Length: 226
Image (cartoon, rainbow, N blue to C red; front, side):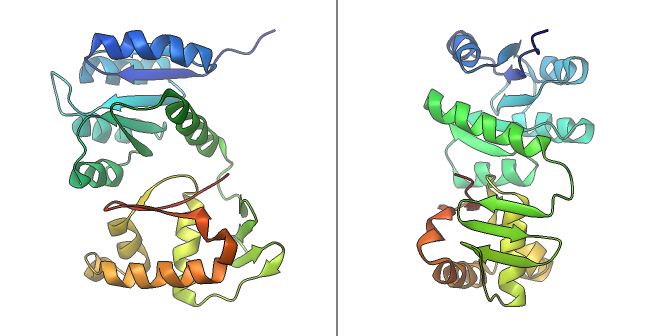
């Protein structure tokens, strides 16, 4: 018996986006579900239980961030924002509200499909997975160990906390505010210089694997999973 294709709910009010994405998703191995309003998107997210959601911010009946907030109260389904809004503040607000990723319009289909696959893989991981592997880097969250090509990395407590948070969200953008408030506390939510210094220190210790620690300008950082 053939397994059903993973479904992707596309919430966007532009008909051309649906005409463009439906065949692209099918070629990529997904089944597309269509919603043109926030309310319809929330209804389908509840009744159809999609494997991922592509969500536009500019919907006719409500702002996409409100849809995201309501969706997060119902489900932890992976959500990728699709939007022509390119301001850093919009990206940060969406990611802080619970989006898994953010893709600007116009976008590359190949990149979008890759991000979809990565988001779905993350959602299927067993909670509490002790080891996160990113290329030559292994982060053992249970034993508080970081290994590079099998050799242990010597990290300060702050460096470990930062790396562990990025590893728990591997492949996903973690905003500067989320990193600062989690690692240093709410009083340091705006102290981005702290973050730059420790990210620089981590990159030095990662050596050639430093490329795994990607900067998303003005937004945050992402630990890549090649």
